[in-house]
Image 1: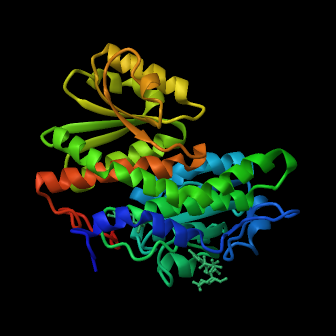
Image 2 (image 1 turned 45 degrees about the vertical axis):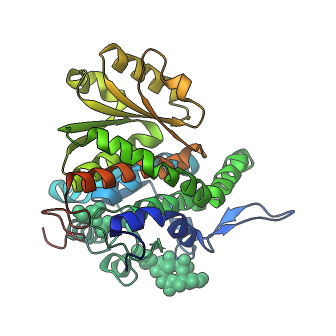
Amino acid sequence: NKGKYEHYMQKEIHEQPESLTTTMRGRLIRGGSCKAKSVLLGGLKDHLRTIRRSRRIVFIGCGTSYNAALAARPILEELSGIPVTMEIASDLVDRQGPIYREDTIVFVSQSGETADTLQALEYALENGALCVGITNTVGSAIARHTHCGVHINAGCEIGVASTKAYTSQIVVMAILALAIGDDTISSQARREAIIDGLFDLPNKVKEVLKLDEEMKDLAQLLIAEQSLLVFGRGYNYATALEGALKVKEVSLMHSEGILAGEMKHGPLALVDETLPIVVIATRDACFSKQQSVIQQLHARKGRLIVMCSKGDAASVTVGGSCRVVEVPQVEDCLQPVINIVPLQLLAYHLTVLRGYNVDQPRNLAKSVTTQ
Ligand code: UD1
Ligand code: BG6
């Protein structure tokens, strides 16, 4: 039931304040006068000691689920101190890459039925690793075959392009990072800031959804383009990949997410006065580096659309004029949840304006159960 919406993708984008609330329900503990704020993941509590002792954590997924894990990787590394590596499911299987008993492998899959991810799971089980699932589907193959895990509880997702599951996956993995990380005195302020940020996140998502009309205008401007680049780094490298994936999946426009740190190693050759480029430059430790990326793109007459934190427009337009999209600022590790929303809206409006099928893009399936 699409309710007041025209498409499932549109509905699922707009229901993210609610889906995130459901994802977090019962999992955040407010703390009291003498009790610290904390988190609870019922499905993992008996396995946390094993996970903390593991030699490394490996995230495995495909498509949007891989991107969600990439978005959560920095905070998991920071809070756990354990090396975290990333694997695209099919690539791990193709290489038969080394997996050890001392590894914790986290399988991220909205459907819980993706063939490549399941094959990687089978392989990791054979190699004796602890296998953790993060899925939206109770009773799915991933949920059944992993040793333990977390249901993201985002509610049924129907649009082939994943939107609300992506933001819920990131939130679950941020909670996972808090659950694995030690509650030391030195990390307390950071942990509390993240937990406060999680409590407030649905409100902030409501706020960013107000950019709907602005994104429709931007889509109108980009309607006839051949290609769109999206530059991000740090916490928002994943946002660049996921934003570009949304645009290419549904609007059928070529789009590429680029790690801004790699700009000079190839992508800069593409920059001219015609190719539109989205640069994600919200406030975090990488902000000044992104300012310098913007200046260098300006110097080559790049056609820029800059996403920045509210009130920062003047700090990101130095050196030239460009279109600016201002988003609410949240704790740095949660910013990917906010920043993807305008790009989801852009992909949606581009698709409608270009006249393509939003909920079932050509050649794609919601759940890829064959190889
Ligand atoms: C569980 C209940 C929830 C209830 C809550 C009350 C289920 C599905 N969930 O939620 O309805 O409100 O207790 O405390 O009954 N698991 C895997 N692999 C996965 C995902 C999950 O093995 O990929 C396992 C978990 O380890 C856990 C079980 O499935 O044993 C349920 O996981 P989850 O729903 O996340 O647990 P709770 O949040 O505790
Ligand atoms: C398919 C879907 O390619 O599978 C994508 O079209 C999705 O939206 C990908 O991200 C992975 O699916 P899942 O269910 O394993 O998260």
